[in-house]
Length: 385
Image 1 (cartoon, rainbow, N blue to C red):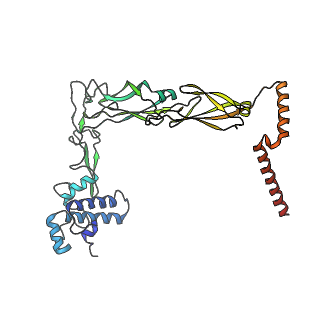
Image 2 (cartoon, rainbow, N blue to C red):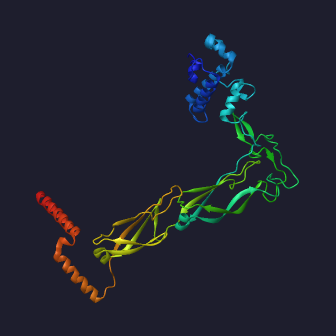
């Protein structure tokens, strides 16, 4: 069977640059690598062809010969159809370099002495509505990993120093041959640090870091809400190998309030009102975060009606204006009535009944709807007979 054109194998044009070849090879190799396609013979064959094509086209002399004579000009130059040729071991060939970049190791691989930034931390802070609206200052106590003071973060007992790992020789990784290809893995002896600690620090047991608690003062600005975060730079976990500390994010969580429910810059509350007040009209006292105010209830107001009090809400941390307070009235049915009260209510009920829809238009409309419904149902059943 005739071999596929190397340029077609990599999906590039014949005038593709070196960087374009490299990028195409990385993409194709990752897609068809045997580790990603276990048991797939077709993927393994494609991977071998991709490797062979890149090995030829990445070498200027071999590429020139291939461009002039085709496969006949490079037969025997590639690693052969059944294996991976000499460039794979990572000696001096371009294929070893690019293979290392994709599957670990090589020039861009693990550096055990590299400084690593510490992890970021998050602290969930519960606030009352009043604290969130008006701002406050709170002290929080957080657990965090810090460099061990006795050993200075080395993990070795005071007076001693870590030694170069005898397994990986300080590289932090070892190369393991698996069939026809090699894989870079974290060194099992030093766990990637590249160092061995013969005499561990008794305080941190060789870890170089210990868990500590620290107390921080956090200033909460006015108007914060659930989900808002404050970043405290450098207050996270300590870095490794001299790297900078991470950050601490304090996330706000508002507690449930006994009266108000917050919705952004607006507040909502439900106010119980006597039925005489809603019937005759009147005023009720309404609590706000800045004191009591009076709310006028028009005569004939129904239970569930919502009144809007502008500017009585919350000033958000992001906005300059204040939201509104929405008051929903809930008519309360009187309980524990005396005989005289019951008698007066019965007289009122009789008087209201005489007036029919004049006093209870909603009830009258509801009665008409239910009568129409039952008439339709009755007609449907009679039609079925």
